[in-house]
Length: 65
Picture 1 (spheres, rainbow, N blue to C red):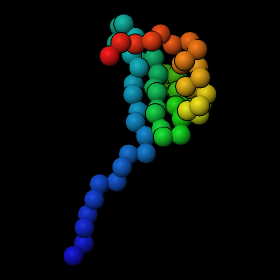
Picture 2 (picture 1 turned 45 degrees about the horizontal axis):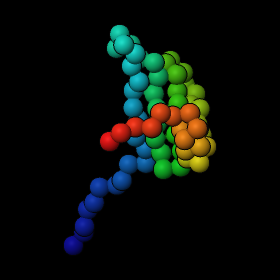
Picture 3 (picture 1 turned 120 degrees about the horizontal axis):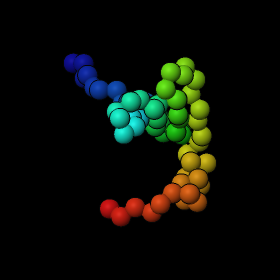
């Protein structure tokens, strides 16, 4: 008997909108890093998770859950 299963996602894409609900760009979250594509661009810009984590710890605002 064959057992079917769902393949896990390799990434998650999020559309970023401004206050007027106009597209600003996209963020793609992958297990290996975070990518950014500005509106209308075919190119993605990325950083690995270590670089992203260091940037966030130095520049991000601590959040309360």
